[in-house]
Image (cartoon, helix red, strand yellow):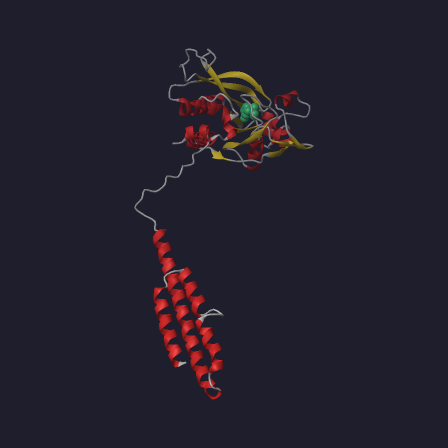
Length: 340
Ligand code: DAH
């Protein structure tokens, strides 16, 4: 038996030295340590050993078996380490390679124009206020001097959420909210989304406006035109001029439609300005005394100016976009043109 164990030990050492991978490790286990392997064979041959010697020989065999198993464990750990090292080598990253370029995002044209407008008016001391998109009839119409059944409500195709609750049709209700919470002097811009049941090449059911409101003592149309001159020159270029035309809005009196001299042809007449030399850009006026009074501001002491700018309209003019739908499709071929 001693002899047999000695031979087997030598065989295991020799075979073990040759094991380099998973498959060879498994063959090693099969040959020596499985149920029918050589080590189990030793235990079976214990039958042939004289009875009185069996305890001592059994002990030797057991010790040998433990040794053989320890050999296997050591080999197994070694194979695992080698496999890991091979994988690490294969997966090495060359950190000197140039990095893959990630596409940069960019601001949407509406955001670009909105930021530009905010910049210009902030420079004149305006603060920003944002009101709710779901408004009540009172703020959206009534207190802006548009009483129930007033025909001016037909100017705005309104989405109703519930009776007397609407998706705001303009940012003008922001004027009421500001005047409710602040005392003059007031100088605010109210940017935001507005909603109307209207859709064609130049109208979208959702679009953006920027309301302006100034309330103080002695505010006149001259203040309005002066501020708007600065605004259009910042957006369309130094040389452009504004022109005020009489118009009608229930919340202003007098009301004006503001045109800018055509920045494409310089006023000579071209397809953009429909050969008139002028392009309509926004509406405004002197805040109606009823609106001031509706907000607890004495119209005999204070006066105000207001204006409403359609942001999409400005963006379309500035960038030469002919269909408002392009603004909301989010087609990357369109949006990429506005990257810095
Ligand atoms: N709220 C008007 C609209 O959506 C735009 C407007 C016109 C706003 C005159 C004003 C204003 O503040 O004074 O058509």
